[in-house]
Structures are given as C-alpha cells and as structure tokens.
View 1 (spheres, rainbow, N blue to C red):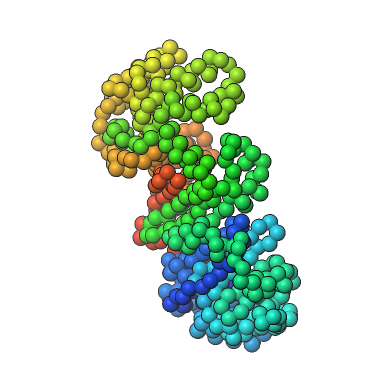
View 2 (tube, rainbow, N blue to C red; view 1 turned 180 degrees about the horizontal axis):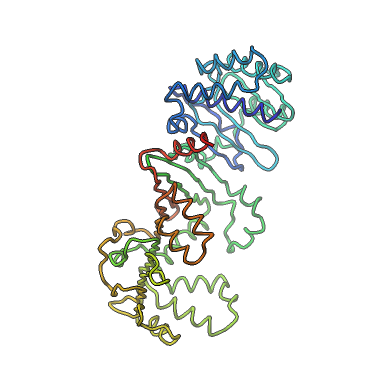
Length: 466
C-alpha cells in the first residue's frame, strides 16, 4: 500500500512537469545540511527530452497509470483535474527538485506554486489511503503517512523521514549555518549544466569510506575535498562529467603536483594509430612517477630486488607521449600499435634480453626518440589511412576511446561472456571516450547508436516497451 501511495505521487509530479512551462527561483538551500550528499534533478528538462508530453496519447497514458488502482471517484476527478491543468497540483516543478540525505534519513525539497492547491492534493491522497488530513503547527502545514512527513508553507515543501517537529523547526529557523545556503560548492552545483547533478561532500565520503581514507598521504584530509558529478544529454550523445573541488592548500598542492607525473600530450604518435577497438593516449613523466611510488612505499610490495630495478629502469626511460591502440583480431592475435617517447633504446633492449624480438608479424625497436611495438602487418611509423584526429588528444593529459562493436570482437577472442556483454552494449552505444577537461575535471562521453534521438527519449521508450 505504501509503495502504491508513492507511485501515485510520482506519477502526479511527472504529469505536472510534462504539461508545465514557465519558471521561477526557489530558496531551498537552507533545508539541506552542508555535509550530506545532494542530487539536483531538472525534471522539466528530463521530460522535454523524453518527449512524453508531446502527444495526447502519452498524456493519456500517464493519466491512466495514475488512476490505476484508485478506488474513490473523488480522487480520480482530482487526478484528472491536475492532468488537464498541472498548476492545480500546487507544486512548481519547473524548478529543480533536490534529493539529499544520510544513512539516518532521506529527504526531498522543492518549490510550492500554490499552497491551497497543494493542500487539496495532499488531502485527496489522505482520504484515498486512509491517513489523517493536513494539519497545522506554528504556522506551517504538514501531513504524516506512517514514518514519512510532508511539511510545507507558502513557498517550500519538504518530504522526509525525519521527525515532523524537526522539519517544522527548519522552516522557522533563519540561521543558515552548516547548510547549503552558505556552501560555495552548492552554488557551483546550481550553476553546473545537466539534467541530473550531484554534490558529494568530503564529509560524507569520510563516513562511508572511513577505512579507505586512512590510506591517504599525510596532510590530506578527505573532508577538505568535494566533487560534483553531472549528466548532460543531446541528440545521440550522453556526457558524464566529474570535477574535484579542493578546499585545503594541501589538496591544491597535491593536484598541482600531479601535473609533474602526467604532462600535456603533444599527439605526435596519433597519426600512426589505425582506428579500431581501443586507443589509450597519455603523457608520462616516468622518473617523477617512480619518485612518487617510492615516496608512497608502494614499491615495498615488490619482493624481488631485481623486479624493483626493472620498474626503476622502465620508468626512468619514459619521458613523454605514450599511445597504445588495438584494432582487431588477425590470425588469432589482436593488431596492436604502441609508441612511447623514451630517452634511449633501453626499453627495446630490455625486451630483446627478455626474449621478445622483431619477426613473424611483430616489430620492436627504437627510432627517433620513440620505443615502438607493432603487432600486425603495418610497418613502424606508417601513417594510418583511417586514423584518429590529433586534436582529440593534443593538450590533454589522458585520452581513452573504445569502439564498442569492434571491442566486442576483440574481447571475444579472450572471453565469450564479455563479448556478449559488449555486443548488448553496442545496441545502444557505439563509442565511449574518457578524457580530462582540466587539472581537476574529466568527462565520459557516450555516442549512442540512435543519432537522431536524445538518450533520455531512447531510455524512456525502452522502459515503456517492457
């Protein structure tokens, strides 16, 4: 019964979004504690992209779904009235809805459009499902259903499993200390573009992953860094973005130091890589990476002294662009192209000493400041006829791209189970790219199989067809 109540509320919220238009600001930040994870959902944009409000048929479908299982004609009439005029729900769903919480309580906060209409909606649901009608306390209205409370005034509504008196106190309290109203990261979240956005405070991470955070280098406190994650979509493309927000000088210095290990890509070797299943491009400063591994005591996990010396020799030889590309499978082996800028021929010499040498479709060597390893018929330093655009990588620190269809064939040569998973993914996604956009931010870009539709429309249609 409780699930049914929630489903009806969600359907009504959806209907209002589908059929609404203008917008106004709402002040909700003071209700959200500044140490909790908070998600912002732009439901208006979500439904515009889904195209669910573009036809009378889709509107009728949502009306039918909302009225399904409703016993009282009075409630059905109320639902129909809201479907015909969404403003009658009393909720301004053209503003973002914020979800926030901790292990103790999950909450939602949004904007009221008309208090009277919202009260009528809640009382209609109360009568349908047999719980008490809306009450008033200290000039604030509230409705209780089991252990869940909806509290509201003329401007804001809060739904939460917190105690009702505690929520009412938030409405009356003008003090915004320790809330998102005084949090610069929340302001950045509001300004960030995306259908769904999330702010992950370091305080929350420190509680959930308390044991893991103990492994951080001395001077770094996870409470001093937060992150914003967002999802943007357009025709044929979905982009997931993540940005770290350091607050302490220690974190800022650590991030700045990371540029000593990964430099800016020149892209000189990209022209030699044939488009295929997979390509990874980075700029590595091997000597600096070795120093950091030594400082972090990671090398102590290597037991054999000769292995430590090999790691040291390999990393100290690397100094610049590195690319690794895999095209497809030929004669049971993947075609591989790899170049890495090195100080000398030591890496190719080490490979030969280990028994790896050129011949039988394999080329290993050193030329013009680069150590190369080619598996396949292509000669080293041959420009690809169907290669990647150097602009994809130039100036970045890392770039990774996958052709999902070709990757499924490549993976299939190793594991048929993973091949099936990749083939299923290829029904929706053709390409995936991961790259940095700044020293503190990165993106995952998915190019969809259907280039003419927004991914949200595709997802909603798939769900509706189930």
